[in-house]
Image (cartoon, rainbow, N blue to C red; front, side, top):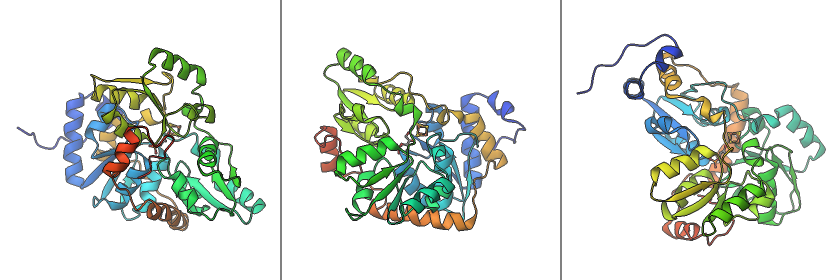
Length: 345
Ligand code: 13P
Ligand code: SF4
């Protein structure tokens, strides 16, 4: 029998003392009362994923944030993801359980730094990876995610230079895929992916010679050159459903989750050390506290939000909104036939 809605407690510490079952029940009640939706990134802990209404990669989460009919969005991910939700759904209250969950890659570039680079390349189009602040998105012509970066860049005339911020590794991968020589990359990177090295991949391949290698495009070029498939986190989730053995180059939490979902299969982390501490800052205790206290609100000046929205909407139009891959796209991806395919929806 379901018990009545539990009373609000005072501090996060009070919530942390509760069992997971109690927290899950509180979260369920409060979500219902508030007409709230919980969006969780693929890197979130299993307990957070279990109470999320929707789990996905940056592209799918952006689309979900734009489409949801809830009044409140609680974003379990990092700051730029919650900001993206607010940009796309300005009339909704967007909350983050832990405002300290930032993305060090996004912090590589500021609006001011980007304005300076734009003044040196006045003819260039600006493509901003969604792992960037609202300010940077507002200074950009169009956004992209790891799932649609190649399609976004290919939508820009081939002779037009492109400033690409902030991920130099994703920029390099796009250069390799498109053959363009007019991309000016910002020198940012994700330390979680950039720290993965060839030696680790070689050891994993020695131990598992029949495993397909799938790597996130935030990794370095020398690793991506060795991958059978380069794809976003949701592309990896789809591949796990179809393959018995994969070496997976991305945040460790996703690999552990896939192994838990498919205990009979063998999913090997390319690097055991690839952990994003920022993503892991969220907990179910903080999430429950956040819903009960309606904190921490994510907002930005309307002038910045409106300009950032244009860049995000252009991206969503190019991706045709988020759509599940067709059976044919899925078959090719699963077979690893679209070697280095973008996993784009
Ligand atoms: P995805 O868009 O592939 O989920 O990646 C987001 C991210 O932050 C990877 O580090
Ligand atoms: Fe940012 Fe890297 Fe963490 Fe993704 S894994 S949120 S890019 S620091």
